[in-house]
Length: 569
Image (cartoon, rainbow, N blue to C red; front, side, top):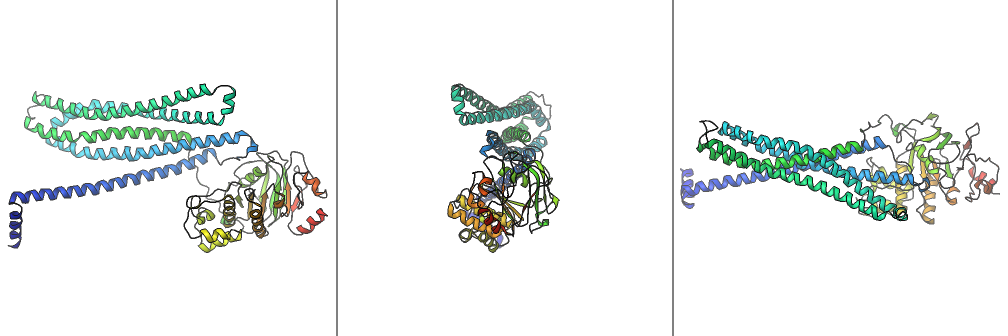
């Protein structure tokens, strides 16, 4: 038969039946190696993917918990003193600590829990084989390993405590080093720098010592697992030779049992190391729970899509910013008006905007839009505002992502249109559709940040745009171009601009001047007198700082130029 002939020919070529048998064994070995390689690759991918997924979800929980516990950041202006700066430093430390803890948890998943599971799966068939081969020998081995298992369980608790202590010492070291650097002048005056440096060294040494001892304990446990396995095998063999395990155990059965028992050494070691890694991850997870609160449910009951796109009357009744020293403000802003808010540094101009946005609480007063109160509305789509802050934030992402900010861009043409409306046509031509990531693939100037942030506000569709010194980082020409873009939005959106620049204020329909408690002024006084020398406000129309009462400043954009001309004659 052809098949028999082929086998005979193959056997002859390979040196007979023995050679063919060797080839089959080699082929089986090759197949096993391929299966092992594929399995290792798949398991490595699965481990990395699972660890990454756990880390991603944990980061989102941390973010939600952080916002739920700490709320939105307060103002960060120098004129509010050092309290804001200290709070920001504390937040940065906490966030850095959380990042380290999340990384430790990810490592605990990849090199702890998953490795534990893999080691347990490797041990399971060996245990079955051992008990199937000789229940008496296997039972003796389990009893011999019981003491080691109890020791490892107790050591796991010690490793968790060591992980927590090491993290605390490391955080204390970073915090102290930061304080020494930030307040070196104060500590130098008190001649305290040498003592603080010595204390810093002690903290660092303690952190290193705790970490080293924890690592050493992990290594001892891992090594002890092999020692314990060898000791257990020795005890079982001695018991078998002495006949202590019964007549059913023969010396002939001990050799295969010993081979299978030796194969369990590596999984035992991996299991011990993985449990130590998981203990550190559990300690990090507990630390994360102390840094953040419970995640807060998202408020999905409000949508900006339900808000009126056409601007409506914005009314402030006896409003005073939480961080500021101005008198309560009462003013009606007509739809589509352009309002400039001016006043000395630290009076509360930026804080007033933050109060309107809902990111800071107002000290007093009420705010309504289109006749409906928004006092209790959360920051976001429940309020009719878009925000252009002084420090315009950018994502390390495309210009489309930055303009639409979390929403899918309708089209490249829509992005170009929004940018061109605010006078950023050059950015539209250079960046839209390129896929370049801002701040990563392409540097962005301070002025370009403001253009993008203005485009973001327009793209949001919010009927009221609040702007906090948007031209602060611009030169004269760029400022003029930005003001022209703002002018084009007049009537279409209500515009509220905080500024120190007379040129910007001159474009406004209404100027609201925030002044210290008790200050008030009425229409009819000369421009210079109202400005009190702070600004040459040629467009000053109303001074709207007053105590709550029946008086109210109406911000009506019509006939603005005529009124300004009358004031400046």
